[in-house]
Length: 143
Image (tube, rainbow, N blue to C red):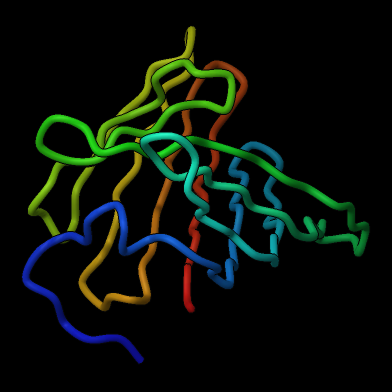
């Protein structure tokens, strides 16, 4: 169980290992997938290397190993998240328990809402819409 906090955590508070559970609700396919694994934030240069690894499972019982990486850095008035290749992804405003951000990618739009209100448990809800995409990712992080 977490503790109520008055402001979003700073970059250093994310460092370390987190248990990650994700539900992926795909409206176009009418399916819900699940991801279970670990997210690690490790120091890298002036930021934290975010790496998640785990198992992605389909509703039909098929599973595969999956991973993704990002770089988190302290930015102007919050945290900046970059793709592993260095391109900017989105900004997380400081001082908000439920900050929101968006990232346009071609004809697709990625919107996120973070929830830091029960820190050190936290959540991210991504809504992705585009010509061939319509899904929501619910991610929960716990120490």
